[in-house]
Length: 241
Image (cartoon, rainbow, N blue to C red; front, side, top):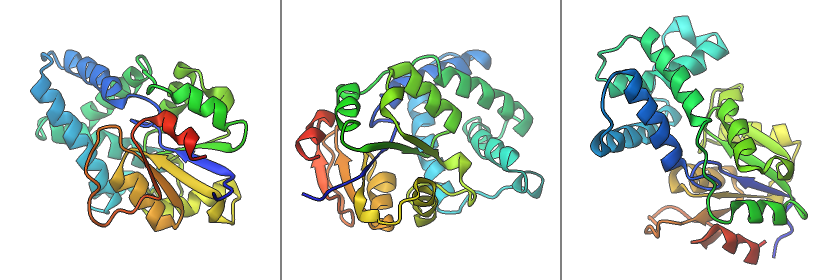
């Protein structure tokens, strides 16, 4: 067994139940727009959101010059563009800014931990440095940490919206900045744990570090992805580390 020093956890759907978290925020968004919640509408939003961030990671999202050169406005524009797309370009970017503020605030209100998350973090924090690395907004991450009561077990928080290169998982640039942030030169001392093949496991491969796929939905391992370990329950990671 390798001797790790850093355990890098994804946040959404690894430590917290992101589906219910997002469902609540989506409901608040629809109330703001005077529209009724529907399961079909929520599923459309959930899939659009996931695809949007994959497109962003692939460099497919174009940001106008007026937002590109100010970091805060760049992030705000990127986050808000999702709502413009969801509402079929029938709202302005200015209204999307307001919806984004509401959505981010709502994400802080209801946070449900994945079963075993606190036990895992508490146990591993005795032996390793715990890192949370996410594509989500940093502000929301800290709120989620507080809500599920794991702040004392987390050593570092790293989010895409704080990167200098405006990069996200799974890009190698994201992990270059992460390891610089950690002052870690030996990547063999780190392992990433996450639920997403496309961002967490692929990111680990791009960064040339070990990875543990949290396959809670019993998905098929797709060709081209090579996690070092696979677990179906988060608590099972204690049998590995």
